[in-house]
Structures are given as C-alpha cells and as structure tokens.
Image (tube, rainbow, N blue to C red):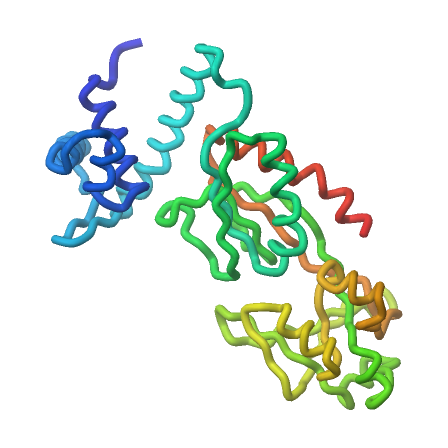
Amino acid sequence: MKRHFEDLQLGSIELFCLAAEAGSFTAAAQLAGVTPAAVSRSILRLEQRLGARLFARTTRSIRLTEAGSNFFVQCNQALTQLVEAQQEVMGAQTSASGRLRISLPTTYGHHRILPLLPKFRALYPDVTVDIHLGNRNIDFVAEGYDLAIRVRAQPDSTMIARLLEDAKLVVVASPEYLRKAGTPQTLEDLVDHECIQFELPSSGRRISWLFQENGSDREIISDGGYSCSDDVLGGVTLAKHGAGVFQTYKFIVEQELADGRLVEVLQPYKGRSRPYTLLYPHGRYVPQHVRAFVDFLLQYRDQWAAL
C-alpha cells in the first residue's frame, strides 16, 4: 500500500477537526498547545491541497462550508477510529470512553431516557453525556451531536434509524372535568367537549387525534379553547386541572392514571401510536461510546412495548 498522507497533513487534519469542534482557531490552538497562527496556516495548507475552502472566515468567527462539513464528518470518524485502535493495541481501551452528545424531545427525554442515564454511566463511567432537551431538528454536523431521538422521523439516507418504541396514545381528562361535562362515549361526542390542542412548533399546525374504530384507523380534527405548542406536558397539566380532554402518550400519564388524577376515556377507540426513533449519522465507523449507548437503549424496547 502506498502512502497517501504526510505526517504534516495528518496533523493539519487533526487541527482542522479541533477547530471545527471548538468553533474557533484560537480555541483549537489552546487545545493543541500551538499558536492560532499555526492553526490558521495549517488549515490553509490543507485547503490548498484539497482545492476547497473548509471554513468561511470573518474577522470574528469561522463556520464550516458545505465541503468542510462533509470533510469533518469523515475525518472525525477516521481520527476517532485511529485513536481507539491505538488504545486497543496498547491495552488501554477496556471500556467505552469519550463525550456523548444527544438531543432528546422534552417529554421522551424526561420520562424515558434521563432516568436511564445513571445506569448507563454506571456501566461506562468514562463516558460523559451532554444532553439537549428540545423538539427542534438539530444539525448533526454543525452542532456536533452523536445521536438524536425524534417522533415521526422522516426517511434520510444519511442517517441510521432504529425504532425505540411505538408510543401508545390515550385520551384523558380529570375527574373534576368529567363530573362537570360528562364522559364522552363515542368519537362524535368530542364535538361537545373542550379538546385541548397541541400545535407542531415547526408548522403551527394542530395535531389530529388518532383512533381505531371497527378495525379501521380514524383521524379526527378536534377543537377547543386551549392550545399548547412545543411541550406536550402543557396539555397534560391543563387536563389535570380540569381544562378539558387531551390525547397524549400513555407513558407520560401512567402515574396520573394510577393515582386517579386523570381518567382514560374513549377506551374502545384506543390502539393508535406514534413511533420514537433513534437516529445517528450513517458511516462505516461508529465510535465505541456511541455503539455502547445504542445497544444500551435497544435492550429496553421490549420492556417499553409491553407497557
């Protein structure tokens, strides 16, 4: 096999990845123990060799170009693999290590994933976990995330998608509301009830309610005087305090149903769900700490499906 890289070029690639992760030449220089000018010269040599601009530069900031983003994904994976290969040969890689950056929806994060993280770190104490809780779609490359969990994830050839759970839907209301307004017995009864709405933050569109009736799927556009966006827990809180009926995920309200603060209604029409999917970038190499977390979560799928 002939040589494709010089030692100087490999060093430039490493400095490029440091600058991409840190967001500045100065920060990369501090991490590498060199001067910012040395980082700048090194990356300029790399750009000249590649014939492409990797960073768009201003006097105050740098950002990856499209070519730079693509190059960073591949180089970061390759450097991670080289480091782990070296550690394995040296006998140092006894368990997964490194920083894991994950993006989670607020409700799924609080009710499913966050309670498990202490167990994960007990197994892998050398892995540190950075958590983003929010419902917006993140940019894996630009924001440096390893994994994300999303509901209704769209097909994407650049991502590996692993189904975690088809989360069951239920319609709930407080005993106080049902005493006052009565209990809906059929789907048609919903027109006479205060149906708490949830709006998709990306589009402002109200989510339709999903049911099964006589073996067929039904989708209903309900109506009501309350509307929440971004955080489903807002609708749950309104329902607990007598504002109306609300369709939500069963895993969110299990405790409230158990202790009677909420009552499930329209049970003959239940059976629908929405999928939660684990996503991570497609590539020939997945770092060991990322693989460890994927395997850790997947072992809970059967448990969640049984609930």
